[in-house]
Length: 221
Length: 238
Image (cartoon, rainbow over all chains, first blue to last red; front, side, top):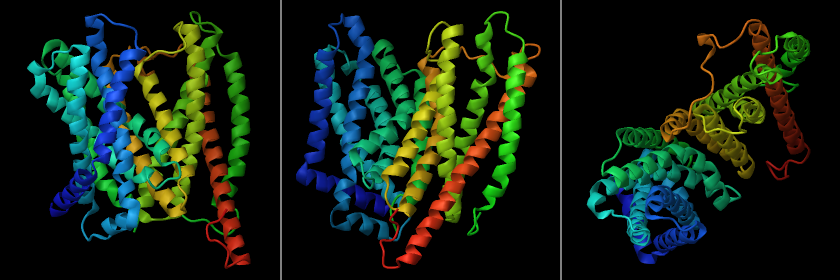
């Protein structure tokens, strides 16, 4: 438990001192929103609302990929990753610490992007802000669970930045479908559909447990 | 699991299996040609004898990949890793055949090349997962690290399959694949060619798998020879 808190604190402190990962993710996420506004034909309000959840989660997934790629790049300097691997604890806790830091950074990006997106697409998100934050957090958790594991894998392959999306996107399909459905339900009717919520919860649980167990084998001896 | 200095135990099994495969292919071809032509779909229905059979072989490959990976992580024996790698590659070949034969049949029967039917979409996602698996293997340099990374991805990839199925079901893809055989969707005279197709695909899968394992065993032998000839040489160089 201490390890989790230490790794989380270390990652957030590093990020606070440089802020480069957060800024890069945020700018990228907003750029994706901007690109969508111009790439798609002009929509009437109903159409725009129907497209919004999908576009929002594509922006989140892309921003997350960018951030997850950097999450372990920092650890490669001065062999910090070997240092982490030598900590005499269950490596699952190191995983949880790294994943918690990724979730926290992504949550900031998600929140700001949602507000900007709502403003430019004329979406009423304030009345459903609470449940929407919950859905966004569940989706972020799902992305960052397997994302943290394969971020650590991709950073030590020869095509780092290219490898992560190839590994991750097919695994993230259930998270993204669940999150898009839940967000769409919220925006349409003000409540989260039960089946989408169940899918998100089950996927998060399965991915978190597996990631906790296999992270052991992702760090080198 | 271990292999000797020779061609490995697989080689002895592979030759009789090859002969069996040749015989099966001949029987299968004859059965398919002589099977009745479907009254509704016409001759295109005969893809039935190839398409699901290849899918079974592909699923066997992906299951073996996760199993081999898990056994490698547990036992640390490289032979399990070679099994996982070979099964993934052969599985991708069969999965590609499924994805190629499916649209041919779909165009003739459903009228479209593609449909977001759950089973179809999951097979496509599965194909992407195992393609990424083989790419991950070729983009990771250290042999032991490759084995570990691949094992982890193979296990998570298999766990993602039921989740993907549930997700795509929720996404609202229309299920237009026929139900399984228990509901009697096979017409009269179609049972034998279908069974022969499944047997042929599975034997072909096993034969290719053994062939692929043999290549790996030979490569290992080559590496050891190179290391013996030049002990100061770079270890692990191809």
